[in-house]
Image 1 (cartoon, rainbow, N blue to C red):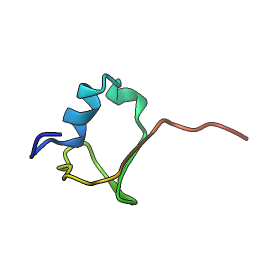
Image 2: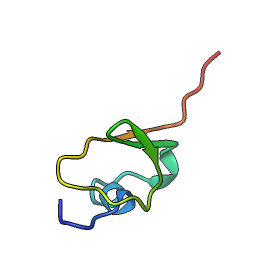
Image 3: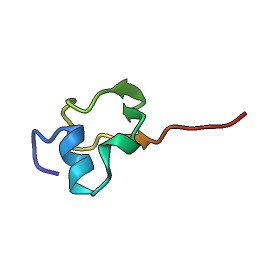
Image 4: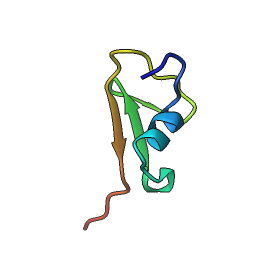
Length: 52
């Protein structure tokens, strides 16, 4: 990934609809779409979960 890419940039690059993402985590810490992703970061993108 290029330096300075945000989570939203990454999501668009891998062609995921941002409205399908409920939770974003980078290196185990919750964040938002405007967070900068650094080389070596582990990014987790999670959809809304239902259940009962």
